[in-house]
Length: 124
Length: 425
Image 1 (cartoon, rainbow over the protein chains, first blue to last red):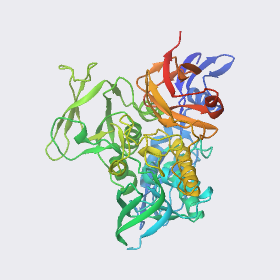
Image 2 (cartoon, rainbow over the protein chains, first blue to last red):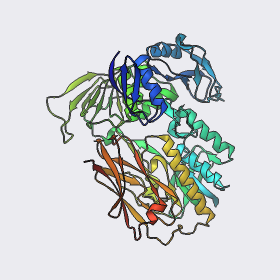
Image 3 (cartoon, rainbow over the protein chains, first blue to last red):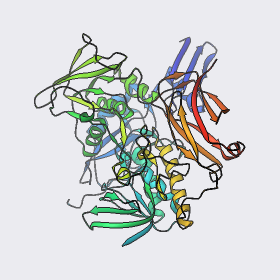
Image 4 (cartoon, rainbow over the protein chains, first blue to last red):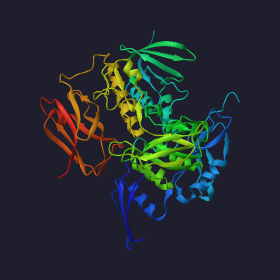
């Protein structure tokens, strides 16, 4: 795992160009403007993770889908397993921001939560 | 006639932040007019994360970011009318609005804030040859269909244009089980943020074909395939480079255009580069008491900057009303013109008043091409007062410099401020 790697930080829209040096003494990150970049670079060369955002079907809501996200980042290789569960899920209206939609998504231990309020439809 | 101190056209991120700021600056009588059924604008369909790092110091999704401002506006007791479409605005700030409940009305405002946002460039404006079957969407339309209405837009897609919405939609379609075969970009660089190339394309192995465009669309009822071709330096397709892709969907992410029909109808002086109104450091347009902010003024990459800019417009609109709508407050200084030069495409604002300006004014701009190791230089007339080296600048990412009143007042007889890029020796 020795060597140098260039990465674009995805921590914020600045998109800092990071240089990661992997040496027997440890991982050294440069080019980041904030601590977020350091954390991202270390994870990216060891265990890359992402936050997954999607939508879940709503029954009886004013709109058909409620937007959701994983409450924290999950391992990259779990993204599609996580999506599979999200796709199978549906919830009744009303939904509130922060409502837990899935308790433990695809065995990651991470919750999927609503990111939007969806009111009940009046024409029921 | 119905009268309000401040009328805000548009209840998206800009309108909401402008309203909140005007309220905090003492305005009681504010009305937001929004044509959609709900407030929040485009954020409602931007379900991805990455919003709010500047404003709230945490990473939110679009709907979460919108909900914070919607809650704030409600807590502040600001009146909002949704389902209300503004048809025209007169030079003396009379707004003609139509809604299902109230029909046609004219509302008079002491100050107006334009916050209408922007629209996507549609196929008709792109001159793409080929058939006209179903399955061709702008990326934002596809985003709305998927994320709000719950439709699956297509199974196999090609995306033309590498704007952020196109990149975000590439990932979104893959996550929903579709195959995205390629993202083609006419220019030799991407129009979107680097982080979106990484997390939307690279993560999923979607090829980004820079310097390519669509030269044919096939299909009778539904798209059956598209042909891409490489383009030369003149951006014209090169014969013999055609590549065919089977697909049922073509998404277009080819630029955003500020939605300024109302501003043009008022006869506001427009900036041909931004397609938005010309503004001074108070974000006041060519008509006294009419302010503009957000994507209607110039297209932003980040909603956080929209909120910041809109808050400034709200604050200045409040001050204008408080001063009894006195023909703008000037200090006796002649307005100083901001010039964009040598790789800087435009600046917002385009003029400022060093005597009356705030202590600090943020000047936002975009560059014309991808520049590595260039500096952003600020000249007061002929004197260079700042030179900041940037590792990389790209047209897809908005840049900014800060001007201080203190420094500008040290330049007697200042006429012109030039923002330009310079190659470092």
